[in-house]
Length: 200
Image 1: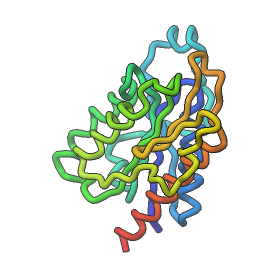
Image 2: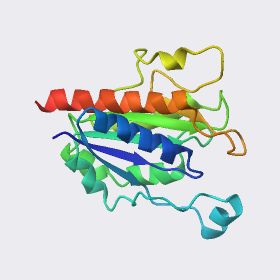
Image 3: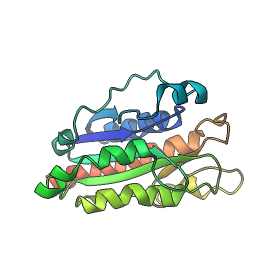
């Protein structure tokens, strides 16, 4: 059975919801899916002052070496000034040993993100994640236009050909739109399906 890892970081729970949707889509394609988050690196006083969401059902990934156990790796992180946040970058900075061995070459990967606003750096953040995956030799699958929900013009929704996205609003009050969650499921299915074909 194809094994998929959904690896994410979420400050306020938006990316956690998207990760659950990505995983749901991958399971729908017949994959065995694990959801893990990267460790929080912000000081406790910052977490408290900013009211980060600290309760989650998903455990922290124990070691970067675990990445080698999966056929596909789907990475989600919010934007920080148009790029992935320090928490996710810090994790990928520990994967040099895997890179040196070529341990992730040939796996399938993808990215998803959240921004405060419609034009808050979604695509540059996705590229900052995808760049790491490409350096490791992963084949990237985005959110192709087979998912027509990202083409809506009657209301604002996330979505990009480079990956599923959502918008949280500056105060975090906007929750993922059903169309955005469906885009995440679609991308999860596509990645899991391709990984299964490559492993066959």
